[in-house]
Image (cartoon, rainbow, N blue to C red; front, side, top):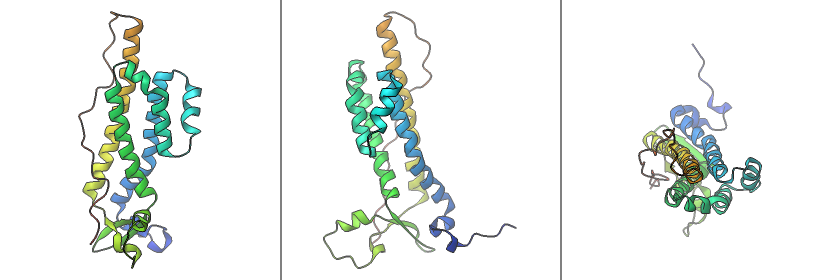
Length: 204
């Protein structure tokens, strides 16, 4: 029988006690980089210059700055192709994913058997006008259901990027060769997924 890990040997003991939640949180933290790569692929579809696209986006520090840089680089191409609305939509969705990811990346974690896994956003706490009596008094309890919603939204946004990039390439091919018959698309627009809550209600 495998020995249960000692929580004292982990920097995040609550994650040992809640492995399913921990796995999804880890996926959100690591998976956001995959969404940035899809943003890059979407920009590359328009620039057709791999070097320019990689350097243009990833020499910029900060997730929000990279998104804004991508919009500045290629939005006009998508608008000209008649894809401005769907481009704006996927960018808006990416910003939501960024906010979900960042709150977990910059939070502290709290766990009890009774409450389960909670996170404390000290930047959010510091903006409070009332005195802070304890670090954990403004904790947010996480549920597995909410985390699965958030994870599902990340997957949806990734698939949406696939569709947008391919739709642009198809529009360009049609513009270059009017009347040509294109093969069936590889990616279809995924069924809309409503933005999940960024965070649960705060513990009272």
